[in-house]
Length: 224
Image 1 (cartoon, rainbow, N blue to C red):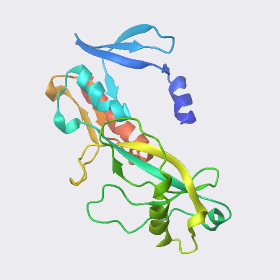
Image 2 (image 1 turned 135 degrees about the horizontal axis):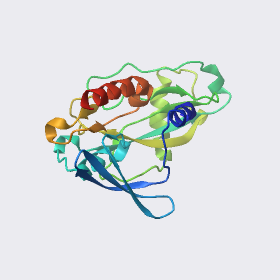
Image 3 (image 1 turned 180 degrees about the vertical axis):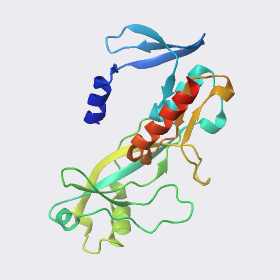
Image 4 (image 1 turned 30 degrees about the vertical axis):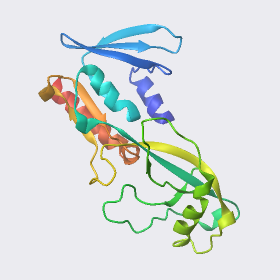
């Protein structure tokens, strides 16, 4: 991510951190973007192209423009992780995935290794009743995580794991519905030329970010 930031600066980009988009208005040949910046001041600018990659709030940003589409509504889906404690974490050197079930809402509790050599189990899947930022950890899930991981990590014992972290992914499908792919589209057909939506981007979107960026660049070149 640091390299992405550096490359952006080197190519003439400006990055405004700690700012909230409060409004998007369509104007002649482009859009007016209103912001509430990190200094608690209102700010606005105009642009010909808008790329909406706002993650959990990407549907809200799209609606600011005037696009109303129930199929683009984001549902918050929480996933928790448990950490494998030393010394058992040193027995694992690679990612381990369970055999997936048909129409799974996630890929199942699996093994993830971080850059520091730490080992995590997760995430599980829990749709939140409302789109709230709930990152609380649930100690009572410990046994369920243990039983799931024990199937492919037979050396694991219950006391080897502890709660680690939680995250929220943006789902486009409701619980029990078939999986939906990322929504990546330039919205000229809806009447918003130059507005590009990236909605429902779950974690593979980060893995595929360079390929997605190249694709979006092609959409821009076809628009200009």
